[in-house]
Length: 80
Image 1: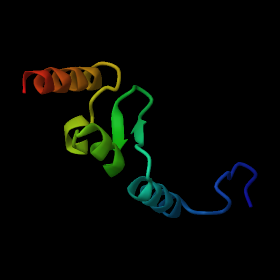
Image 2 (image 1 turned 90 degrees about the vertical axis):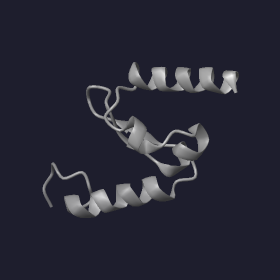
Image 3 (image 1 turned 60 degrees about the vertical axis):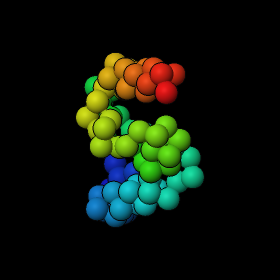
């Protein structure tokens, strides 16, 4: 085993499958960003919690765009 291998010998495809399964089956909301703060993952539970579909936040920046999405949603809810 390579000393630099930290995934217990699993290949990358298997690790990705494990991560996707975790995201799909988690009972808590999970979001993942890349190194720039851009959202790359938004699981179904987080959709249920926030009422925001993952397709509406994918590729958005967590600290700017996402804040605006939540702010506008709250503003609309107050109107209704």
